[in-house]
Length: 387
Image (cartoon, rainbow, N blue to C red):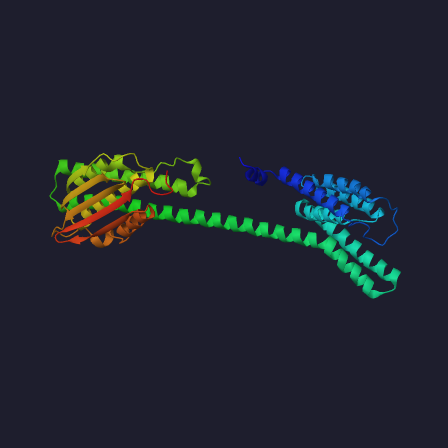
């Protein structure tokens, strides 16, 4: 770790540096004669005597975070001692820093007390100076000087506290908005998942009702309906648990559905009457979100084929292509009327998977080409920001 990183990460190092820098600057000011500032009775003495209260004040600066009031009290004692020697610019710097620290790190009650004492001190000094000199302008001048010295660090610290509070509120609001957006996206996913399973169930049952009774075939249809219903319940339960969780990260992050479940989709669609030719080649290890997106695209394409082109010929092709994986689903357009199309179609399925592909940095196209309907997607194997 470099010196800059250590400096930023250690408040103790920062306070030590500030105290050492103030001491060095104070000694330099004393050497050039910036002492004897106040026209008050003093005990006098050589200039180097000012170094003693300066050292005491700088030592007090080391405890300004943990014990701001004690540090301020020690600093005020050092300032009083320095004033008895005639005063110096060095102790003005120390007092400014300790007042700022007390207003920044002390409790609300302590800050109120310090502010009250400062106003009383400024008012008293201004009145006494005016009465002693007999001139109002002297009272104003002293009041302005002390306000600059004693009140400005309090105001500065209050402004910093306010900015920090605003920053915390903004961060909390951003976090809440992110949570709400994530939950809205999850609710959208839940809608798509349940809609797909219910569509599959309706297609199976509708096809069975449209055909003459057949015990074996009807039982196969019931098994397909049961499988789709159980899958819908499982995925709905997972989504609802995430939506209701106070800490979603504590739950199993595995997304339902992936490349390993494509055969289940093909089997379910085949049971619904589609004639599917599936070609799925080995795809390298990919993040779960990519695998889930491939699953969602295939499911939506097969569901749409079952709804809008029952008993059509379908070709499914999933293959790696360099740093991407391509998904292509084509189905012939049958003349047979779809099963209850108005009820089963929400019109958002293709848009949903197109948006999901775009989020990963891929693209998806869907449309009619002659007598076939094609859904084609290209997804990166390793999307940016996904491990």
